[in-house]
Amino acid sequence: MAEEPEEEKEVKTEGIPDECLNVDPNRLFNWVMKETGNISYNNMPEELEDDPNVTRLIDLDEEEREKWMNVLFGRPEDRISDFQRLKLCVAGLLKDSEGNLKNEEIDGLLQNMHFLCEMPHIARNVFNIGAEELIVKYCKHESEEIREHSAWIFHTCSGNNLVFKQRFLEAGGMEIIFELIKNEESWIVKKKYIGTLCNLCRQFPPGIQSFIDHGGVELLQKWLPLQNKQTFGKCIRTLVELLHSNALTEEQINSLGLNIWVPDCLQSPKLELRSNTLEVLQLCCTSSGCVELVQKIPNIEFNLNISVSTEHGDDPELLEELNSLVEEIKNKLPSN
Image (tube, rainbow, N blue to C red; front, side):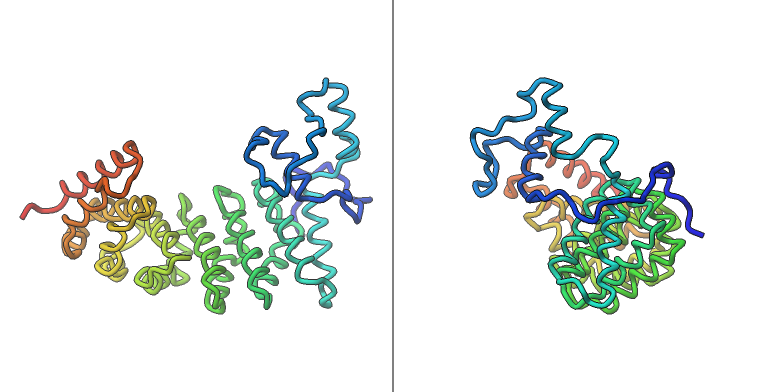
């Protein structure tokens, strides 16, 4: 029997309205962003600008502000919770059991679910209402856009959410992700899957072991040398997580083709790519027996120097951080 969600045990779910507020979500989001101070009136897209006569909530007194909040969202006691909103998304997608929904409607419901799953207490409760089964279903949809958004939900849920990671593994999630990757042709969708795998490996030993057991090292062996622009960065980041945990043998590290992709990365104009690659090399140098692997990379010292060249136009403080990594790597390499 499904367990009760942690955050919503006292919430009654009966009587949830079938329809949302009749408000253009783009304009509502536009208004919310302004009110929360995350964006200014000066840099809003022109097509979403408000009427200049609109009064901002911060210009109202407390009583008037509360009245407007009640008009827009209902009285506090009548508002539905985030978990109830998740249930509404699930209920909406269940109506598609016989193909009753248009692709735009499906994508809209998935976007709403994705937005709600940004909150950890919602993400970890997707298993309590069968939402994960629906997400997997739409990961197999004919529309690439729908598949991408479904895969993105798993990516978002797994970020820094220990409870979700545990429940995901218990539900056979790792096996599901690898099966979806096997049957997926779009690298855009695959990017979301490798992001999910990276999250499951981050500071989570059971996830790392499951990743390896399900063929994760073999996946990196295939994908790293390809340097695909969609997945390459996340593949390197996943490798960093594995090296941090000393989860790979020297033989496994050697099989990842460092000679092929490391020189290109160290010369890349992208700071993040160079930084992650330097972290890979630094971790390899601290692992027993792997210093020689780094030393055998073609023109390694030349490329290390290129990685911190001022010609890339990097921020001086960030460049200083890279320099410290480069010096640490050089100190580990045997002198000629």
